[in-house]
Image 1 (cartoon, rainbow over the protein chains, first blue to last red):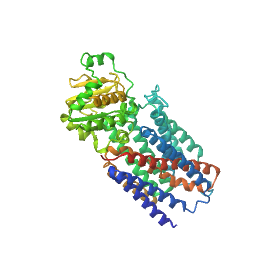
Image 2 (cartoon, rainbow over the protein chains, first blue to last red):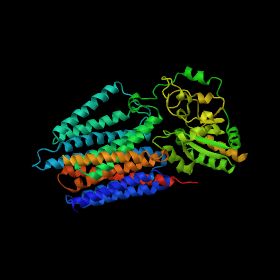
Image 3 (cartoon, rainbow over the protein chains, first blue to last red):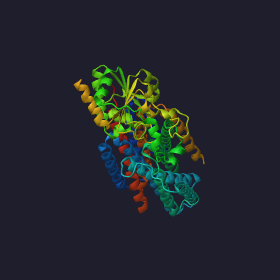
Image 4 (cartoon, rainbow over the protein chains, first blue to last red):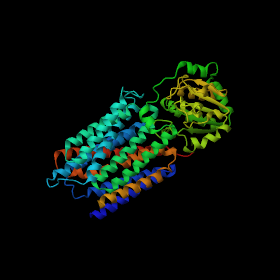
Length: 466
Length: 92
């Protein structure tokens, strides 16, 4: 194939990627959109296999088989709750592949004794791909370990970590500079990979579980940047365009997630929120004598007498695997003519949009899943809100302008405006932000102290017995 | 130099296209969007294939094999989980 034809076909692949993302804007077309993306990838791979520089296919075939088997088995077996860690793993592998491939490209270039110098474009982008790719690889695997529960999900705060990370980041920049000025130095390359890898670990390890949506989005952005940088090394437009698209996607999701927490990216990356426990006195002041608890029977009566019910699911619901019970509850209430909808906060779950996938997995139709901006004006007309395993995202303290409140200014679901609110929760313990929630003591609020799944099943039983 | 500018042009224009397209994706589909985009970032595979097939030195072959395997896992796993997820979304 002539280089012009190859590049035209790469352009076609890039167009297919854009169309694929475009089709992701609607649930009806999204599934085909994904197939269009896969087709673009297939096209790009097949075109590449015709490259004249390929002299043998054994290594390629071995790599393709090993990667496909691993990817397919892992992706096929994973439950929907494990999507965030799965995306983290694949993301890390992509970033790592870019970093290693750049190492091979440098080796390749300088194995030709005639080559003494390379363009600045090549050496700069090689350093960028190595740095960003290695950070993506190790950062994603730490995120995976946290999400999978292999290591503590709470922030791990090393003493003097800002100093350590700052020095390490400066070291990475210095090593990058070394690689840019002497791209033939294998030592510079491997030291850069090692230092960036350690940096990736140290940057992600202080970040707590509820901030994971931001981290996953950011790492996704990085894997795109690493691919684009590798594209610059090869002067390959398919890589540059696809990497750029993914970088933009990750960046936008990062921004949306940060906005939904009303925190800057710097704050999320460096503050280690959730480490300060609220004083007991403070929560006594909020809750003392004002918290009313209820029973599954009473909850069932309230729910069946309602015309409009909104369920607010939080990560606690997913941990308890209560989404399937919630689906049955929705069916039962609908049989009785109750209108049931779901209010999804943007950061509910462990990655952007995670809660929607979990509820869809339980068989809940997607047109019942309402985003925050859409449902907030409607809470005044809601008879009963059922909050399951959510806390900070329904905390009215967020509306205050008090800088001592860690979630001040965070957009929340205005559930307190509904006629009554039933909160399913094990205890009055604080959420991720570590502060008490005045909603639990509100006049229209009832606490149902129980495990989320047990509570939902008990309400269901009570409804059937009515 | 000219090549660099052409590549930069593609990069910057793609950033804008990405921004315009992706801001229109509803929160409902953010997880599949991310895993689909993640699969697309496995495009690195294209570059690694050539490296793995060149049989230049032992080091490039080993790095090439690892990079091909990792990128392939990214691509295959990424598109597959996105597909599985999107099958779950249905209307009443």
